[in-house]
Length: 206
Figure 1 (spheres, one colour):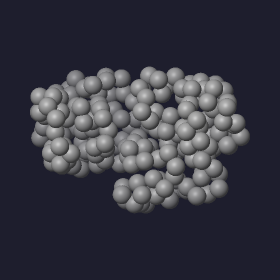
Figure 2: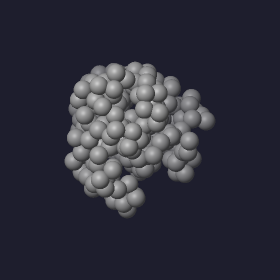
Figure 3: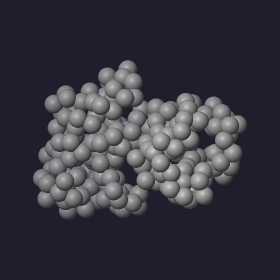
Figure 4: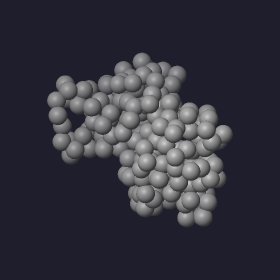
């Protein structure tokens, strides 16, 4: 597994300007955002993890990997939907995975082109694929491409952490959360990761 090259600089900068993050960075010293898969694996894991807990998502993924041997565009494309559903996937997620596999196999999605695209352009491209919404695309930018300045405001965990640490648990508007997040630029991915850790110390990896 690899971590982003920018992590040491980002943590220094954030610790200097934000007391909440300074405490979290110290608390979780030695941990960092990490990726453990190729582009297809990262997107597939994001789809599997939609609207379920981290623990449940890992359980489904493990069963899927055991059933297919490896989770790849080719193996998912060959698999029948009942076999995918037997791994714990909903019918909709099974369809999303098969569609994603087909896009990789037919050349609709070309990962080698993505490093040259800016964040918003790539989000638009990825969200053309069924099952990939903005949240899934943002997870991909953070965990696979290691983009440093992603702020996934639709993420319920991030919303909860911002309320907890910056407003004593009380509700905040999207505009207010966005303003708080603006102070973390250009390291909003890093700030988000530490705020997630404040709720769940076990790092998520896609």
